[in-house]
Every structure is written in structure tokens, then in C-alpha cells.
Figure 1 (spheres, chains in turn orange, green):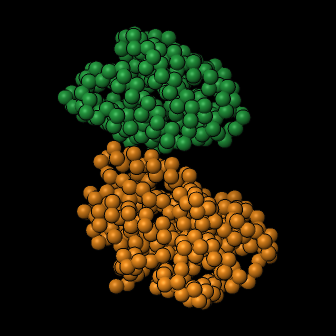
Figure 2 (cartoon, helix red, strand yellow):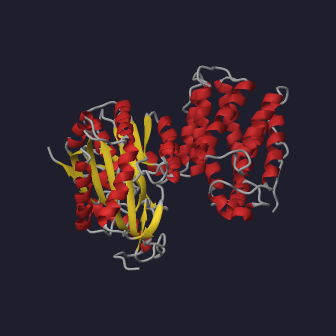
Figure 3 (cartoon, chains in turn orange, purple):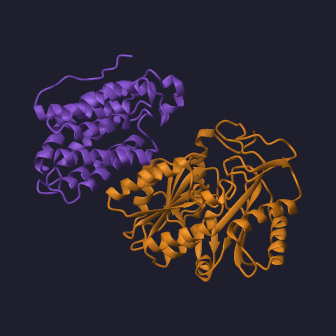
Amino acid sequence: MKKIINQPDRFVDEMIEGILLAHPDQVKTPGDDPRILVRADAPVKGKVGIVTGGGSGHLPLFKGYVGKGLCSGVAIGNVFSSPSVQQCFEAAQAVDGGAGVLFLYGNYGGDVFNFDLAADMAELEGIEIRTVLGRDDVASQGKDRKLDRRGVAGIFFAYKAAGAAAERGDSLDEVAAIAEKVIDRTATMGVGLSPTILPTTGAPSFELPDGEMEIGIGIHGEPGIHRGELVCADDIADTILDAIVADLDVTSGDRVAVLVNGLGATPLEELYVLYRRVHQRLSEQGVSIDRKYIGEYATSLEMAGASISLLALDDEIVELLDAPAQSPFFEEHE
Amino acid sequence: MKTQELKNQVRQSMALLIGAADELRDLDQVLGDGDLGITISAGAKAVIEALDDVADDSAPSDLTRACAKAFANANPSTMAALVAGGLLQGSKAWSGKDEITVADAELFIRSAADSISHRGKSQVGDKTILDAIVPAADALAASPQSPIDAAIEAAADAVIRTRDLQSKRGRASWLQDRSIGLQDPGATAFLRMLEAWRDAENGDTGPKAAVYDG
């Protein structure tokens, strides 16, 4: 294992410390627990708060999207593990401006369990909670079991849209409805080329022999739908694109946003090679790419690979995507 | 039972329940992470303190909500949050009531059990607190003459039966088949709570059932 770390068990806290030192104008810890980050101006009075959370090891997911026009707070777990009930609850408390709080996070068992219990605790404190789960990974379940899908990079779209809705003063139900709508119109699929090495154990999270790829892999190395010989970029793009286009029923005349996301160790150059093919194929199909995002949005430490997400657009969603936003890891200018 | 009487009853039973903390700690050390004793004692103390702020003329559901909040805030543990969530759902089932009957008690316990089952994705037989709660609720419904004694008897029987079960939820499930033969701490905690309730009602100390000696 080669990693730039100190003590493995200090990895998460030292990373958070670094973020706080680098961006004190944008994020802060509201109390004594360093595993909770909120917007520097939280709680924003009269506006809906949005709390996300999950394991570490996915930057910019989840904590990278705390800021103006995005999420208001995040509860941070250890690498690939859930934050505690108490952390989820304290994050909700810290961002509640009196208009309620939306829990918006990926559909993983431990996170669901802890956030649900935190929702009960928040309710006891008189904070109204709604929950919307990211579930955009089409490889994790078939279309008939959409509700059981895992949330991956595509949750970024939900952060962006719901965050903009909260920022403009929408009600809790409206913000939740927008998050739900965006997630429902988002489909993602990934490909992994090499495994993640866990800092605490130094061991790879899964095995992937040299020269092989795994299509449909999850952001913790969850098994995909096809493992085989590594093929060329265009073939990878075609395989993923066919699956997500079919899942969303995107056809000629539709407008989409595209997100080509690197999983941690894949160079930007390769992401643009993928984007090129996505652009060609969608253009051929008469689908208009109205917004595009290329870079690292949801990673898995040093996993090599990428994911491609599509979001089927309408006017309302475009307006929310274009609204200004600012966090340490993402900016959308006026 | 109205709020004022309920308050005294809860206060006394929580004070008695603290006496079970060491036993629960020991059970949880072999099967869980060993914090159940402190969860119960810190939670019970917090509930007693919270009762001081509950007005005698408030509704019973306000009282139980205050208990839920106090219990959750006293502990960062998952167990405490599950219990608090259960008390919250029970409180909702009592909304609009100003006097509590045995049937209401059964309704409260069932609502709490539903919440714990739903939140914890657990069923009766998974070797959790639910294994004691559900039979106790059934017994309450079946024995209106001596409800608390019937509930204790059913819960004690269920707690003893948890020894033969394999833990399916929580940290205890990591032990897999090594959890067989051990008594479930959560189910035991619920039994001790019922016994404390009985002793508080009677004003003397009754027998302890299902005492596990390894």
C-alpha cells in the first residue's frame, strides 16, 4: 500500500481538519464533534436545511457539497461506514432554520438505519424531517426494484437542484419533491478497473485481476453486472450509455444533463475520452446535452474507473441546476 | 391512570430499573458492546429528571414524549435511539387521551414494537428486545385482571427462550452461532422494566425472573 497518511485511524479526522483549515469561510463544525460539518452561515433562518451524510472515502461526495445553494450540513462516518445516529441528529439540529430539514443521502443500509432514528429524535425536538434517498445506480437493481437501488454519483444532481430550491425559499415538501423528481430522472452506471485500498487495513476492498474491468461496480466495490476483459473507451461508453438511456427511456428530442465522473485514480483525460463518445452517441440519437459535468464528483479512494450519469431535464430542473452555488468542491456562478 | 399518577409510576420504576444496570452490562459484554447497562442507567436517570418539567395537567402523550427525548439525549447509542423512536410512536398512539387504560398500555407497547421492528428491520425471533415486547403486549391484552403479572410471565418466558436463539441483528449478530446459549440483553432489559413497574405499583420488591448465570 502506498498512501500519503499519518496514523490510519486519524485519517478521516485529519482530512476534515484540512478542509476546515482550507475553507473556514465556507464550512464549520457546529459543536464539539468534528464529524459534523455545516455551512458557515448555518442555520439559515426561515429556509429548509438539507443534511446529507455517509462514509468517508468518496470526496467530493458527501461533505464536498456543503455550501450555499447545495446541502446545509453533513454527518461524516469512517471510511465506507455510516455516521452515527447522534451525528445525523446533531447535523439536523445545527442546520434547522425553522423550516424543517431534508435528509438526502445514498440508499445504504447503515445510513438508512441511522438517519431514520435521527429523524425520530429530530421530531422529538420539534424539527420536521423529510427523507429522500439517492438511488441512481441502475446496475444495483433492475427497473422493477428501483426503490432498492444504491445511490452513487447522480445524487449530485439532487443536491444541486434541491439545494437551489431551498436557497430560493421553497417549503420542505417542495424541496423534497424536487429531490425526489431529480433522483427519479437520473440513471448512473460505473466501471471499475482497479480496487480501493482501505487505509485502516492496507488491503484492497475487492480483487480485480490485471487486464480486467467490472461494469456496474458500486462506489464501495460492490459487485457489478459484468466482469471481463478490459475493452476500449468507446465500447465502455456504449455499454454504459445503452443501459442508462434505456433505463430513463431517453429518446430523440429529449434534453439531458450528463455527468462523467472519475472514481478516484482515473485521469481527467480519460474522462474526456469517455465524454467524447457519450456526446457523439447522444447527438446521433437526437438527444440534446444541455448541461455537462466532467470531473470527480463521487470517488472511491483510489479506485480506477468512471461512472456516467444522465439526468432527463425539464425547464424547472435546468433553472435549478443553473442557480448559483458554492462549496469547497463545487461552484456554479451567476 | 392520569398524568400525575403516571408520572409517579414512571419515576419510581425508573429508579428501580437502575438497579438492573450491572446485570445488563454483564449480559451485553458477552453478546454486544457492553454499553447496555450505562444506556439503561443514564437513560433512566435522564427520564426521572425530565419528569420534573412535565406539568401534572399535561396529556399522558406529552409525558411519554418527554421520556423519549430524555432517553435519546442521555445516550448516543443505537439502542437508545431505537427505544426513543419506540416511545415516540407509542406517544403518537396516545394523542388525544387524558387517561390511560390497560388497553392503551397495550396499544402503546405495540406501537413501540412496530417502530423498533420497522426501524431495526427486525422480527420476533431475531433475539432482540422485540422478543420480550411482543409476548408482553399479547399477555396484557389477554389478562385484564392482572395485566402486569401476565406481561411479566410472558416476557420472562420469552427471555429464557432467547438463550436458544441465534442473534440476527446488531453487533450480537457478528457472533453468529456463538450467540446461541447466551441470553439477550435487550429482551432482559424490557423484562426488568416490567418488573420495576410492578414493584413500583406494589411498593415492595417482587421476584426477578430469568436470571441468567452463564
